[in-house]
Image (cartoon, rainbow, N blue to C red):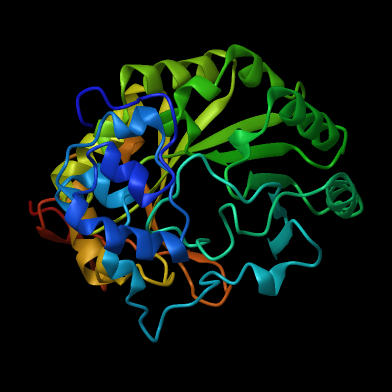
Length: 352
């Protein structure tokens, strides 16, 4: 940021980004054009990490508007993973038999430039659930004993106040067949001050397993403040797992990904999912091929312990679900080791 620029307010427009020194004045019109289509928000902690240089900085590439976002490709979709096709009522996505998404809000503290819900979120998005809609969503879950897990997402549910988060947690915890409550968030790394001790206590649910899936894509996101926020959650007894997106220009190489996964693990966050980027509008410049992604994953095997290995997954466009797309190590009568060596399996009998 420019010396003397404010670090307290969230940056929400092209003019804000120019004033903070994060977008060159000559690029202001382009940034404004993107902002007219997709929401912009960069928190002060995040802005303080960025260097001027736009897409050459892996953090700036994730959060600063890029004119390439207005290049919509034929294969891209407004709802790339088919949420709406599996939404029986407002706020609920029921794609898999034993779990549902509860989309309680549609705003975020920051807006990722690759977001797969970018057509739904933001100040002009779908808005949060009102009391009647939330009650209907809770009733839907309570009426279906096959629902084992509820995943709170949006938007980012960590923008809720501690009071509201506590009320939602209490309502879900009162449903006997719901055993797991999972929150998906970017807040601990992009706005860590929101994760207060009171908020960490608010999402605890005695007798239930509470998980928080933390989204980060680069090791530089793990500031001392972010690490302290993650510690507040872990120390409150909440299990932490990760989710990341494999992004060209951000983390699409084995060394950067290894650093990211180690940063998660060092902060008591178990690496969980590495998503292949979805077919969201205007995100083609982030996408690599699955073959390229698999090659990177092959390089991680042996470089990282099993604890640090995420599962590389693809959400099938249209809403058909998530599938692992990582490399194969087992062939017809042989296995491949992490160095690329091939070995017969079962092995031949030992020689006398």
